[in-house]
Structure formats: C-alpha cells, structure tokens
Image 1 (cartoon, helix red, strand yellow):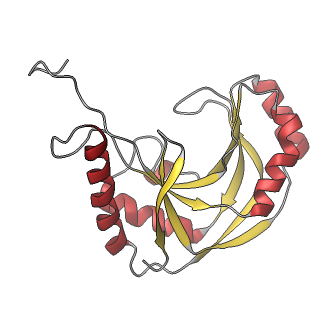
Image 2 (tube, one colour):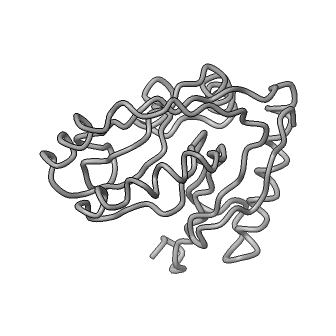
Length: 192
C-alpha cells in the first residue's frame, strides 16, 4: 500500500522493437528441437531497441492511464526519431548470456550487428534515460530464442550452431510492444 492508503498503480513497461524478417523467424523455428532443452522458448521474435516504463504517469489509473501513457510516449518518440533513416541490420550467429542481468539464465539469442540500431538506441536513451545494466553502454542488440536451463547445454548449442546466417534486412519501422497482452500497439515509420 502507498502512504495514502491506496494501492500503488504500476504502469506498463512498453518497449520499442525492430521487426525481424521471416527468414530469421524460420531459422528460429528450425532450431526449436534444440531449444526445447531450455525452460522457456520464445515464440515471438523481435529486436528490442528501447524499454520504457514503470509507474503510470499523471496519477492516472488502470487502462485509461496506460492508454494515456502510450499516447504520450508515441508523441514524444516521433520527434526524437524524425530524422532517423531506415537502417540495415544483420543477424550474425547464435550466442548466449550465461548470467543475464534479469530473469533466468542462460539466455540463447541471435546476435545482431547494426550501427543504425545503436544510433537509434543512443538517441532514445538521451531523451528517455537508460534502463540500468541493460541499456546505454550495456546494450547488446539481440533476438532472444530461449532461456533457463543448463549452462553446459547452452555452451554446446552455441559451440555447435554459433555460426549461422548472415541474414540481412532493412529496418524501416519500429513497433511499440505491450508485454501485458504480448502485442504490437503502434508503429513509428523511419524517418518518423
């Protein structure tokens, strides 16, 4: 309970993601038999660019507060990205985080190379701040495939399958994602 006796309202932690191409999703599907050794396998594959979130703003509660927050976030993001052109991204292989900052480990992921995604990420961090230990200097562009389970199994998978791709694509839009409903709730074309 908050000091005023009312429950604290926690807002949604929206994110802004880059879509990944069908070729990367097919590769993830092909890896599924190997990924079932892990506790959780990701079915939705996106490339996180920036997380936003925490408490609902302006004292609003519930759905209307979340909707207000999303509308405000969209309005604030567009001018930040208005001169950002579409950028190239490249899936370069499979790697792992042995001990992730949050959640169970290890995390198996597709590694992504993209100077453009770093530029967009830096600009958004300058405007909205960084999530500690995940963003800013600590940001690693990746597409999560699975998490939890044996570190040895993760090492074996990366050693055996690490060199996949490359898969290259152009990111021409970014998508707002609502983790509560696990769905896209808006999009920002590049340039915005």
